[in-house]
Each structure stands twice: as structure tokens, then as C-alpha cells.
Image (cartoon, rainbow, N blue to C red):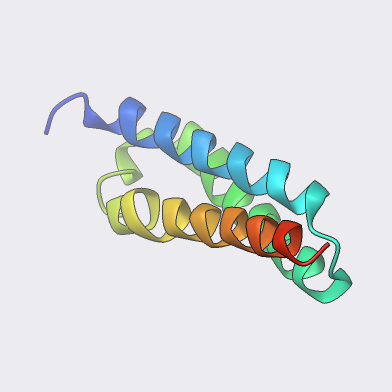
Amino acid sequence: AEGAEPALIAEGWDALERMRRCGRRIEDRDTRRQVQELADTAEDVLVRLGEEPQRAMPLRRFLNFYLPNAASVAEGWVALEGLHR
């Protein structure tokens, strides 16, 4: 859809911020590192999309599915750690 790219990219940045926020709170060192590495990779993709927003539509599965779900998994991990304190 015309004009969908900015919205998709904005949603991607929102999901990335969720991952970053969780990554700072995860106590398990290996999981925290994995979340941070995934967030770094996602940020690289989002920066490139900012430079070439027309590429957002071909990457919509990444922006609409993988990135938000990765953020949800990170949030779930934080919640699980909170239950075991």
C-alpha cells in the first residue's frame, strides 16, 4: 500500500525499543547477550530502511512478525525471571 513504509518502519523502531528495554533488564547473561545481538541486527536493518524506505514492503514480514515477536519473547523472559526471584 502506498505510504505504508513509514508506518512499518515506525512499528519496527517501537519493537526494537521494547527489545532494548528488556535487554537491559534480563539477568541471564547469555540470554541478555542474545537479545542485545538481535536488537543490534534489527537496528542495522532499520537504519538501512530509513535510507531506502521503499524496501520496507519486501521486508514487511520482518517488520510485522519477526521483530515484534522477538520483542514479545524478550518481554516474556523478563517476566519469567521476575517470577523466580
